[in-house]
Image 1 (cartoon, rainbow, N blue to C red):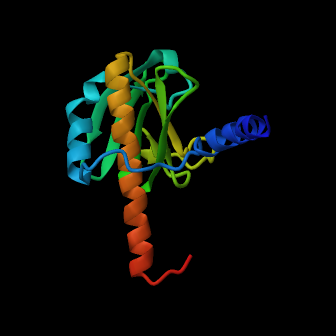
Image 2: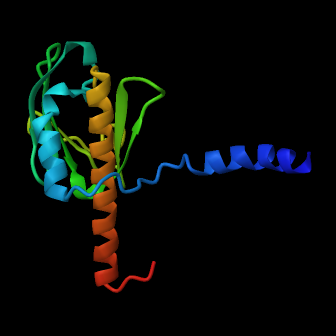
Length: 170
């Protein structure tokens, strides 16, 4: 009886401990292979707009390069053009948002740059560390989530290697 009670008490603690946001290695794919996969299947991703008038927003350009993601969108209400850049080297984690078809990509700091009509917006409420993306196809969602998580793991490993090469102990 004591053994069963101990198992019942320890099991939830062990499960909660494994649900942390830290990314772990998802596959053996290289940085380039992961980015190529994201480039190939970017058509299935619907990006959240930076505009306050999101229902009038139109994504004009999505560009996934080897080192960054660039989004250009237009606010159909005001005519403003927004450009956001997420540098993959700063990617920290990717996770599913509340059991939905939305995933969140998070960087290590609030540095997803937002430009309006060619001018950088400096308000802290307009510079973010997160971008949300919706993927309707459930199978594609799981594959893309795994790819983004793997890219976050690779970025973390690159940052760790750079810190060690610089002689940083912490």
